[in-house]
Amino acid sequence: MAQLQTNPIQLYFWPTPNGWKITIMLEECGLPYEVIPLNIGRGDQFKPEFLALSPNNKMPAIVDPEGPGGAPISIFESGAILQYLGRKTGLFYPPDERGRVEVDQWLFWQMSGLGPMAGQAHHFRIYAPEKIPYAIDRYTNEVHRLYGVMNRRLADRPFLAGDYSIADIACLGWAKLWERQGQDIKEFPHFGAWLERMLARPAVKRGLAVNAEDRAKIDIATDKQAQSVLFGQRART
Image (tube, rainbow, N blue to C red):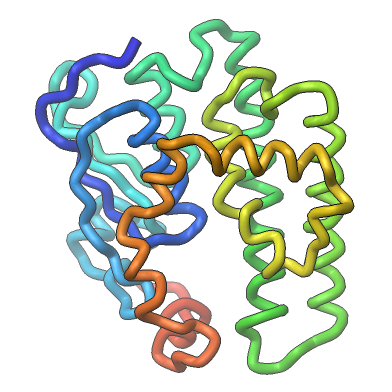
């Protein structure tokens, strides 16, 4: 059962698939939160105050003023945040080890596979200044393979780990952008039915709506400054 939270969780956020994971989870858990917009197309993720929270200069990140023992805690990496909020509230992350392993497998599958591969498909299909057929085919085909994995998994269960969990929340933001990844959802009927179930959840709708207007402020496909910030970074020493 979710515990009462007096002070809002601070969420450093921009409306992207990784950011949506956390707004959806916070909405599902009924936790109060304050959104701190982080304009990743203008370099907010490189500001020293954010790097102190997220040394990988990626959002989302959170600060929970009511962390373990009542002391504040900051967390970066969307998967780690989902696990933390699941443990904190007792929601969408089973308390038993077998249940958690079932969820973790699919959470890490998203973190290491679906997210990065879909992101590369977006990059080479939409953002890359040179359309490289090999790269487009490589990542479009890999996303197709991954959706096939999901489709088979969902053939006999409503959600990835059986019950609705943080694994489903992690996958949604990328999965709902299947058209941008060059996929035909009709090829994956169980995946499509899962996506409909997910998008029908009120908390999912609220999570996807957070600061939605910001997504239209920058067209990464044409904004050279955003492209330089997002795609041209090297190590900072």
